[in-house]
Image: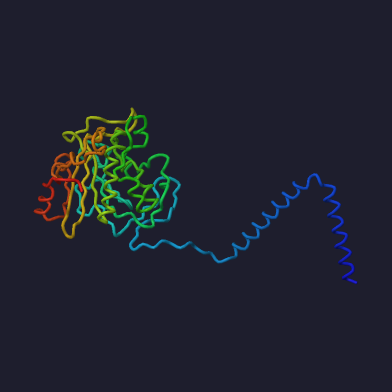
Length: 333
């Protein structure tokens, strides 16, 4: 009996469907599309429900021995991202003096000018960093996000400039530790280069010209030699700034007349060094090679010390320090 009733119900249902279809024959494509869309929605809902209750899986990770690339992108409401130091890195390995207002980041260490001598430049005295070969698990493609304005360091707010001091000045905020160099240690490390304590005013054609070209060369050397160390900063004619930026009511920021860069590598137990002092102005490429002629700006570490009042390589024995600091490299690596 139940079987007969079921067959009867099926017959009635088919008839009703046929009647509805015939009544809406002009709207069949629309009904079909709605039915298809609903089917997709149901399918996705079911898939979500299944996945919710399924064990979580993670994609295979690229494993690299002693890789220090920081993959976590922890975000803060503003200011610095979390500063997670890399214990195996020695950014100021041979100790630069003096050390004034010091802050260490994951990718670099900075000593910012204090006001002890009565001349507050609002510039870093020096920035030092160890750079290693590009890690195998470093993402390829678009660089990480950067803050919309440069970070103003609360710890050194009385000495460091505000971002607005650079606005409408005609000068760029010149990284001393380049963002794409810091990116080798993760997105957070990259982000934290955008702070006014890691910047000096630079003419844009210098910043995007010979200075950038040397930064790119240092990345190549790190890849070639495995690791290198860099110390860099600004210098002033007769150790006194002659040009400042910043409108009335803003912090005045000194504009360096020169920028120096010291590059160090280990060849076995032996230290190899190059020291450069660039005039802070646009520099043209060679008309014949179409490249920048960096060898022209090779100098000695002693000359940089005389221009800045800094003391480099202080961890070395005095005799070795004096020997290295007197050398002028005869060629660029």
